[in-house]
Amino acid sequence: MENSNMKFQVIGDERGSLISLEAIKNIPFNIKRVYYIYNVDPKLPRGFHAHLELQQVLVCVSGSCKVILDDGHVKSEHILNEPDQGILVDKMVWHEMHNFSEDCILMVLASDIYKEEDYIRNFDDFRTSIKGKSISNNYFSHEKSLVETNNIGENTKIWAYTHVFPGAEIGENCNINDHTLIENDVVLGNNVTVKSGVHIWDGVRIGNNVFIGPSVVFTNDLNPRSKRYPEKFAQTIINNYASIGANSTIVAGNIIGEYAMIGAGSVVTKDVPPYTLWYGNPAVFRGYVCECGNKLNSQYICQLCNKNFKDKIEFI
Image 1 (cartoon, one colour):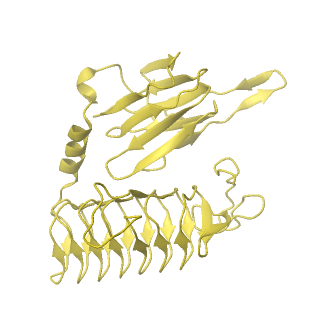
Image 2: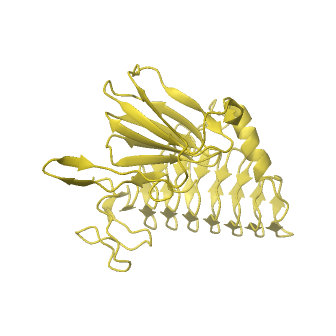
Image 3: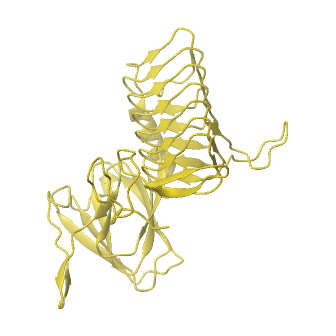
């Protein structure tokens, strides 16, 4: 699931502000339907479905709500609370809306008219559809690896002394290095690099274009005892384009945001927001990073790319 967050240009003066939403320009599809949700009971969430083909952009023109997206590889949470923010909900993405404020007006721009046959309303059916579309035999596995799943995307390479369990899901164009282990309840997106000595245990979800450095440790049980197993292991989420430095430890149940950077040898004990740099034991916030990985200056500008991230980052 690529970056779903959208930021719209605000045009305004002393008379007020204006935002223009245009098909194919700042909305990535032709708009065929617009609807909005209001007067929602804050205790009653909405959504809970995916679409086979429909694309949508969600904009909270008043108030706020929380949007949860799940593409079968990564589950992410987004807060919509400004009229110049949007969330792209692509096809085959399960989505839910929660925590509506009393003054919330949620506008939805859709790529097609309403078609009931385009809906997937059962989450298990959605997971089955995603899994079925991910299966590919066009990948490489070394003769000294043990690969027990068929759910591997095209052009992925799995090297020697790697054990991939039967329930694991691995996307396209991944590179899984020597001496690694990927357990059953693990999902890797596309273009993921897993360096040597990494064990990825049940409950870990890794997004697209993620880098996992050598000997990174994932935990999945906050109260471990030998021969005692929880009903469900804690879920750890590494979002798109994040990088985890060598020998870092990611404590179970935490979320690493998009484009975040974890320095080598760090111990991550809490959620890490997007575009942030953390390192140390325990890891602490050290600044903001560009999409290229370079640290931003005090004006939130990358001196390598010249990009300004002031409107993208969440200030800590």
